[in-house]
Length: 120
Image 1 (cartoon, one colour):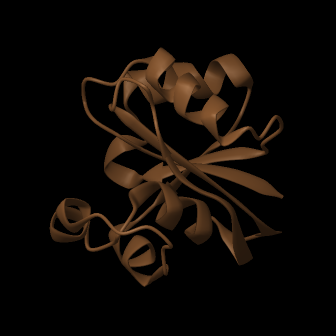
Image 2 (tube, one colour):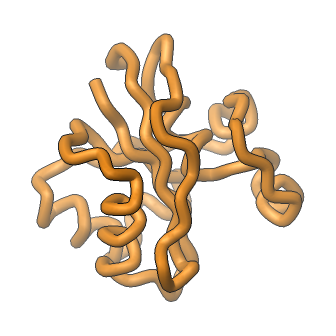
């Protein structure tokens, strides 16, 4: 199973999320993962619906337990993880391996990372 993890600002658009995913160069994903507090955003829901993908909500404890490759001091201070996108992608799967580290959308409003693993 392949999951794309997303972190994004409130001002992000569907195009921001689409751009971030495109920058991973991963064509097919099975689900989208994002923090619980972002999962119901209209932008994310529209993005998921357009791709007919389920959204996996990741709680703070699961995000903080994931070891991320990239490290943002600002994100670590705010979320307790080095990368929201990487942590969400990893936490959404069992025996997960990060296949694409965090990339940032061209407009700097969204991040995406991709992991492969077994369904939870």
